[in-house]
Image (cartoon, rainbow, N blue to C red; front, side):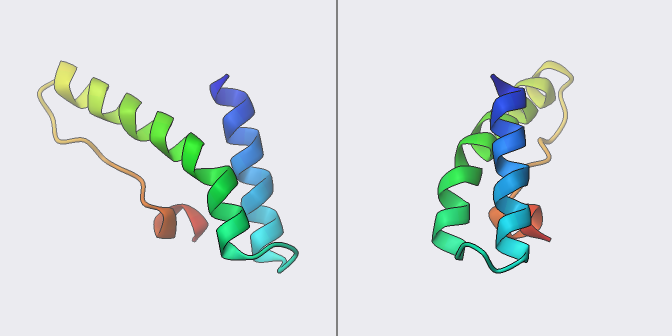
Length: 62
């Protein structure tokens, strides 16, 4: 499941960078992946008593 979300997010990122889709459309495809990735980051950080490294939309689109 996470691979499907990641592939979809990567595709949206590529289309956004090439100006095929606008930011709102890209966010619609990317947000589910970021939620899963950030949840996993929080889970691992809690396990190892660390601070989670969260991914923002702006950072992902860079």
